[in-house]
Length: 431
Image (cartoon, one colour):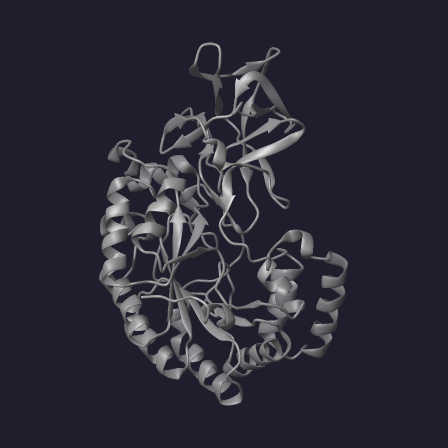
């Protein structure tokens, strides 16, 4: 197919196409042409970003080569990238060259995009058909009204007030909005602390990193009474309900294991409905086992890599090992509960033969139920520089063939984006 035109921006953020140049993607740090099946119209709710200080790379169909475009009509131009809506997976990141003087990029994912026949296109796929965070389904006026009503009803509950004032009204968090709407998955942040120093942490960044956290981290540990009240409100009202500890707006929930354990026990005394899930780094298997004994239903463990070396370079664990993470996964399967991996996607690394081999080894060791793909939100140059993954060389198979390969090798694994409800878990047969 004829590829969409390359997009660029002027210094003021005005976006336009640059014919005859065509859109180009990046695999690691090498420009490549997108495959037709990886091109979709830019999903509703996505954003477009101008990348300052960088030089766009496009494809010249006449010269049949990749070219840098520094000016258009005598004015400097900059690359444009898409930040795709929830439930979509990046296949290629946008292509550009980064001079040494370029500032760090904020903590977003930068997907290749273009313009064709009056439509924006992005290089990605919908990885989950679940509509729970489709932005077209959120009526913001209704959300605000419901939030104010809940705020009055639960004015004594510090956690609920945090979700309403900070998550719903300040940041527009889709998960917190769904709590207000009494549907699907509800967040339950608990931890101001963390025992990892992830390069791309979206809730806390050291001053010397040059990057700003995307949101403030929760500043208190809620008590059991507030957590249980939040959970019971949601479990009693929502269809397909999930309560999830461990959110992007907090540290590591296993560090508040006592509070979470007490909360799960109280919730399960009152109801067996819904799924109680924890999103975690899996660093403390002993705490995971306590939570399982209390009634935890599922776990989602975040992994930037299935390789110990690259895992450590990104997550920079403090007082735990990659082996502890694997042990947590193994424990959950031993209890017969649902195991998901929150797998950070970086084109050219995730689909590199060495990473594929490591993921296969992990799944053969612990037959996980689900891979939730998450576009890695970080300046790509910082990620490649800090982890050293660009030194691996270009032995990548492409992210669409990667999905096909994993599905073929491990046919029981579900690919998706969201923590599934109990009703969905029952329909999936797994090893």
